[in-house]
Length: 408
Image (cartoon, rainbow, N blue to C red; front, top):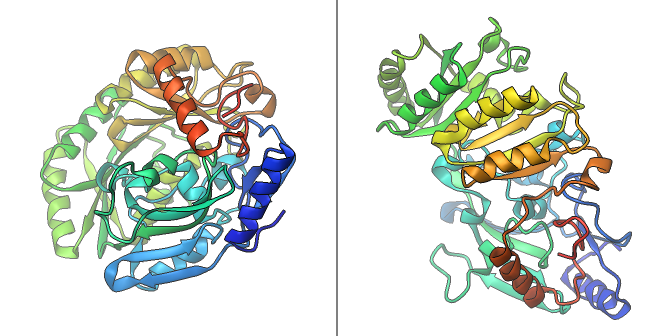
């Protein structure tokens, strides 16, 4: 069913409850290949809920229906020189799906933030309020239109990142931020992973307000609009500074001096810098159409100081490649094909550091036998089941999406 408004969503959910029929919640379906196959063939399509309810640029507040195109909303806010500060990821290159097809609801449901997360936070930190339909077939609202609007449970943060398993979002209110006047990227070449980790830590610990710190060890990747950055085939460590032009330039010069002990430092700016960080955000080096397109890809979260050592260990044990973002706290690992996508090794190494790993790209046959999302401990699994039961007692929404052979 394709819903036209929130009432249609209510009706569809109530009918599904009455029939005992689970629903797969989709917008444009750009992230359906992440997670396990939903245990149903019934779709609730919310892409028709695509209107902008209100946009107040002076207040930095946007209210929009959940099926609205992220591309269209980005163009709308760009017209006022504003953006989502957390840099929502476009998964199309990584998954091999059509570009620029994601929706606002999918952005919130997945919660995949880009390089600026280290400074701006994630999607949930910019979600002020929402309207949704619960698993009881009832509409409800949470949050509001200001930052300090929470009393009791913060349902917005609970629903963000839940992959559509708790409710059907119909409308969201988000905080937008002004775009930076200037952007500069410092480039350090030929550092190994350990040295790159130390350089990123130094940059992030400096007083220069860094908004991105990433390391790309691959020598085969060439950014489309900044090909000269990797012309030598060396690994590159990237440090981004944003803000007023004079301030960004001064901070870049000062930080370049501090980082000079690691490697000679070069600099790019403007559109070339922006394109480079979009490529890091979207994990372009591991694109489905690229040399490693047939390899499974893991998204690993760990303490930033431990990231480079973890990446080096996984490379030795599997023969894979890594990309480091968030100063080493986020690892994108492309590993050679294996029946279990090296799940045992990846999860054991991540767990030892207090981290967790999600299998973002893999064949469907692999996802049928491997847990895509990191298995929960007993206490967290019990709490998660209680939350699921409170929102969706009949297990109608995206049944089986998060747990292999499970219900939530």
